[in-house]
Image 1 (cartoon, helix red, strand yellow):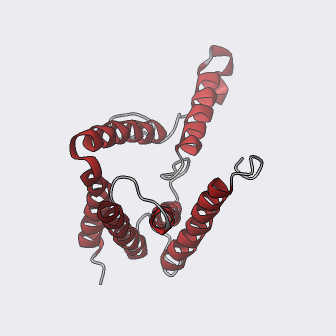
Image 2 (spheres, rainbow, N blue to C red; image 1 turned 180 degrees about the vertical axis):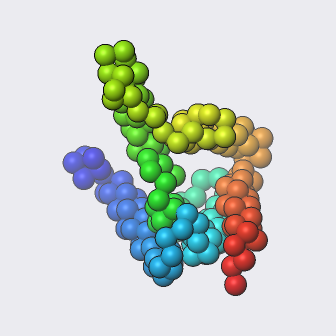
Image 3 (tube, rainbow, N blue to C red; image 1 turned 45 degrees about the vertical axis):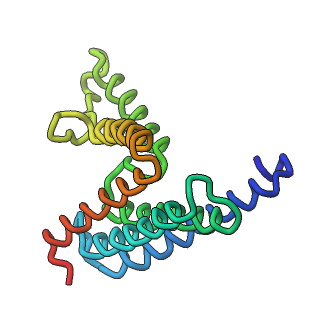
Length: 193
């Protein structure tokens, strides 16, 4: 879009984000694919999320140091750090092999949830009883996993918005704390060396 509108700054911002995201995916994949074990959660996934946490700390620190409206080179540095973190997270989550769930683009998860809902509704009709399918593996609350993920997206958005109103830039520390919590929990569970 930015190219079509001859928006040079938009092209540079988008291009920087895309390149950094790909680099983050490559870094994350280099970490998680070292482990040939194909279990649901390996120490390499924890290591990749540890890298994401470090990148998020750098992102939060950079934004806090530069102020509420970064400009110049700081904008590009922040774009790179945010996109790198997203790329590493994408590679780590992909390695978990959880069908229909993405953590960095919610439209993919929404698409999966909608398609599964349509399939389930079709199979629930009396004339299609022989084709009846299970909606998806339910979560602890009995909801399909993709619905739980969407619920988490919504809660995260509300909490993040409220935190930004209350704490301004300090709200950037919430995602850092969340990822750090997962890393510590999973490192303890899987005893990462």
